Length: 257
Image 1 (tube, helix red, strand yellow):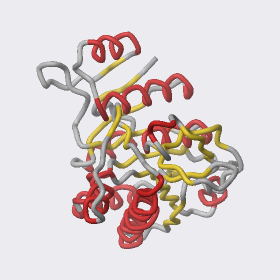
Image 2 (cartoon, one colour):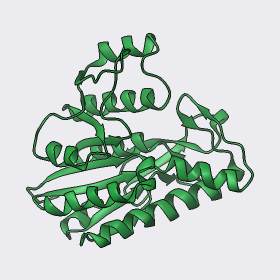
Image 3 (cartoon, helix red, strand yellow):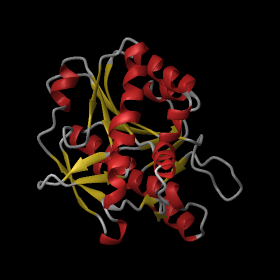
Image 4 (cartoon, helix red, strand yellow):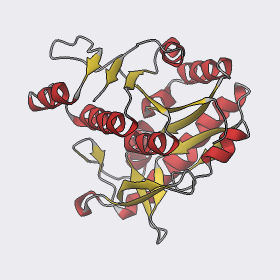
């Protein structure tokens, strides 16, 4: 991109979709900060759970990743790339932003199967041929769901944290994970303001970090290594945290090399 504006990739945790007030506040915050480019990447796990349950499917996770059998994919894709994406789009429109709903494919991120046992769970391949830089130059706000495709057109459910990291790497952007918690917590439930590779490995070994947070922290560390800068984990429940981070303040947990 020719623009001198800084680019931020903001990953929104799926649970925020259940809180329209917080969602509107987050987009209102972005609307006040017009001195940068933004890309929003989202999941929607709670919505997927509800759709699958209503359809009579049992759901399971493995190390924080949703097992995604082929027969469940129409519901997963519909929830993420359809309902969740358009719910976010509606909030962005309401806040006078100019959103465009995308899948990872349009954002240049292809996928391949991660593990056969996980079904249609995708692993991000190198981001190429993305429409995102063009949209940013036009003043649009890309809203990217965590659904992608391989070169044969097979669709995949990609972990949204990994998706956000892949897009941030391609754009050489700053990366923020807006999640359900204020920060990564230690064994006593206290916020950890700074984490590096050694500390993360120890906390995982001790069982302090596990499940979805383990995936998020490992992904954040890989992103920090690729981007060669700190990556933040903070809470969507406090939209003022987002403004603080965009202003260069230290909020939540910073993951560094």
